[in-house]
Length: 256
Image 1 (cartoon, rainbow, N blue to C red):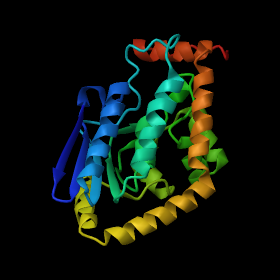
Image 2 (image 1 turned 180 degrees about the vertical axis):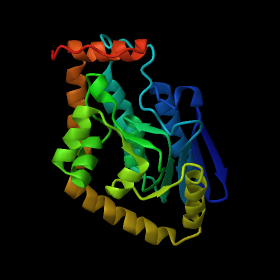
Image 3 (image 1 turned 90 degrees about the vertical axis):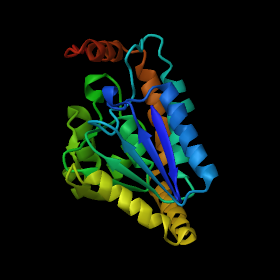
Image 4 (image 1 turned 60 degrees about the vertical axis):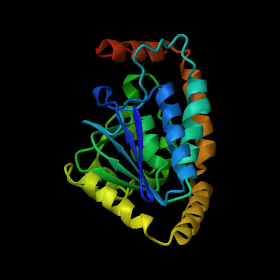
């Protein structure tokens, strides 16, 4: 599911479950965390995150999850948030190549990466309007700061996904490329960064992180997101949204 290759001073981390659009279950999150830990121990000077197949990451793998017994707080507080913090704090420049679906926790992986290059045809956002759930993985903080309250709530209420082009034009991510060029462009930038002034890069990374956290309250926001998501687990609409997704049908919500 998670592949790690070390080549000179670069770590290549690959989400490799294309049959399920690289959706992440608890084991995959642990494996991804372990891959970053191994890359850090290896002392690489840059890291690139990418996904195999038609998508970067379609979010959480909820196949087989029973919303009546699902430990959402454990998944988010115990696995997702610590992973995103490890990714954000990685002691080298990090890059991500995003294509296809970049949803839910997949969006969170991008938020936790230093530089994100996206395919023009990428689909970015949250499908949670159809699940009776709420945006998580830092999405509220990023969207509100970059897009403003009105556009953020429009995206959340409607479940509309942004294209890669729109996401870059809106200031969410770094640069946009044609879908067949984004991976090569990201890897080239990662290799170039691995030969740069690493200590200077890390000083800038720390300064940007400090300013970002002051402005967004990113981790505090994520704590509130996780609590909101856990509270929603007990609602009929959440269970209906999960069931509809698993059964590949449109949900019927009652507002409860």
